[in-house]
View 1 (cartoon, rainbow, N blue to C red):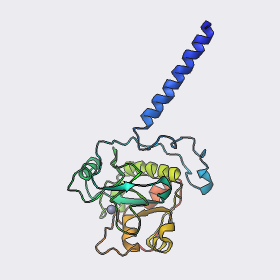
View 2: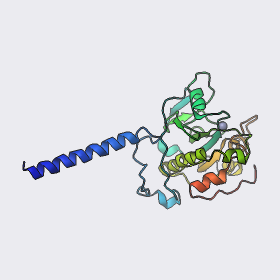
View 3: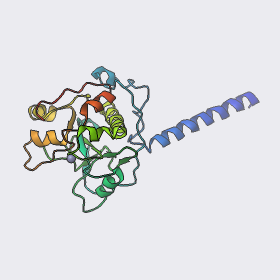
View 4: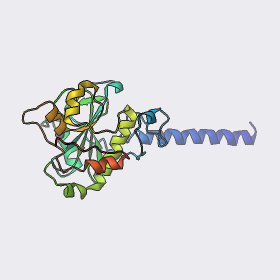
Amino acid sequence: MKPGIIAATVGIIAGAAIILFTKAKKGLSMSDDGSSDDKNGGSDGSIGLGINKKDLPLPDCSTKFTATKKGSSRQDSKIRLIVIHSTEGGTAAGAAGWFANDASGGSAHIVVDDKECYRTLPDSLIPWGAKGGRANEDGLHIEFTGYAKWTRDEWMNHLAEIKKGAAVISNWCKKYNIPIEFLDSEEIAKLGNNAHGITTHHELTKAFKIAGGHTDPGKGFPMDVLFDEMGADYKPNPYV
Ligand SMILES: [Zn+2]
């Protein structure tokens, strides 16, 4: 080969190696396959649903802990709900570590706090997140570190984790064609398995009348701020 051709060939190989390395690095973040976290967005046609008004970079989520409580795998096409929880504990590492304990009674896919993100289950596995309908079978569950009893001001002291969660949720919405819309308990009860959107553990408790059910993430959780971060409007829920 002529020197010019050799140089060009080396350049192409180096470029391919960089692309592969970049993809491998992305594989360590929350995306399961690294294919749909295209920062430019829209190439999959999801813009047509009026979602992904902002492209938020995904946080790097540690896979140090794997939840012990999990169900079978599912198809991506089944995923239609995102369920928001609060950990009722002080750190994401503490909650993620608890999910990895055999004694734990539940699980979620992602746990965030101000500083860290943990992925404790792949999206493809059914979690033990919330009772009520098919909230586990068809849902992605995210835990925000904090307490259901917290006031809005207390949550607003943790804006970093709200932003981190917004990035996770908006990317889920994009990947699974879920609208960035809040579903309250009445809508969930009415729409049943046709409900597509974002809700909370508390709304599921009310929708399915779960006795003694969980009420997280609580009335003080700044849902409007979370939606604003995603470039979407939060429709206040009159039933809280
Ligand atoms: Zn919960």
